Image: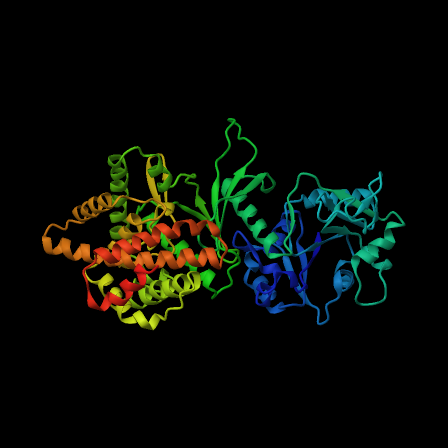
Length: 559
């Protein structure tokens, strides 16, 4: 059997991503959709395949050349200097297809339709063309008569959707116009009157036209979820989960049918970063997420297992830890003693994260900076606080330079006396999951070498869980005990660094809450600003009266 794959289109609805990557090379499960289409054709008996190209043809040709050994078929690319439309592309391969019935399939559809059954149906019908139709409300407009013949292609909201999959008989070339550029739909419309276009109605299959970023991302989630759970792709249901402060989206993939023992085979969580072009910031964040998460799991640090990922699609599949966060557990606690016990367990694991995470950690895995550095503190925490919160949210119009010396001093102190290890950098209660009385760290993509005190500060001054001041002090003492800090000098240095890390963390939180609520319109974060401001004022008051910080203290007390 032979086939023509239509891959010449521009993919304009997928801009700007198709500026550098043609649509047929968008990936599903890290394999280009073109590769999936070729594999589907080969499994159906095709051994000779032509691919027409026009837009970014060298990338498609390079992919085929580099993948020859994995495909048991002869595959040849034909470049169209002038794009010929769907009909003209078929006419252009007449010499190759003139001796037998052949498939034509669009390169931008994902499907599991049974092509072998389609081919047998076409041969039995003895027609010029057999088109695969599918019930999809958004695309339904192909009319079919009671005998199964297609009668028209322009009946919006009625009939069925044309999937872009077809089998044609070589005699169809006799009905093609003399012009080079024409639409196959125009050709089929004329043949409908002769009852020469049969409908192959495919029910219960998966089919998706990946013409937009949303439909592509949705298909990528569906594809990877089905692969991870070993279930037919049309059986997977994707449910959106509550998001976090990032631009990522979270989903749960759940199969709907039951296994033989009457139980559903589980679920997976999908972290969707959006389409990640090579060299982009989102790609750097995804790479950090995968590398660091895999490292932590290997080091037996409690994090969810990364089951699979698709770098281009921006999808990461994770072990499903459920829906309970540390914040939920603390809210259910009835007394301070229970709360302290909970946090002591978390601190034990945080020590493990710091020590085991740092062992064999490769700084090249990080994004932004490799360490928690003075420049990071000044730009991503101090200036962020001034720009996003003080001036952006509160409209106070204060210059960063007016308190630059104070911020420089704060950055210095936040690094002095630090207990170095691997730092999570966002170790708050919503980034700690609880399953079967076991705690797990999530959202570790910002991890880098840095002070343990910063993560401890993130945990204890967390505005999602307001811990009493005495409980915080007791837990700091517990952390120092777990780190083996026994002398007064060691404990004083640790505590001083901790206080300044609390300050820098607090600045970062307020910058983030302001940005998320004002710019990202995630208004739920605004509710935590008053608690964070109150904590910031408490911190600045209990610190030693360093003269260099006088201006900063005055600013903070006016918030």
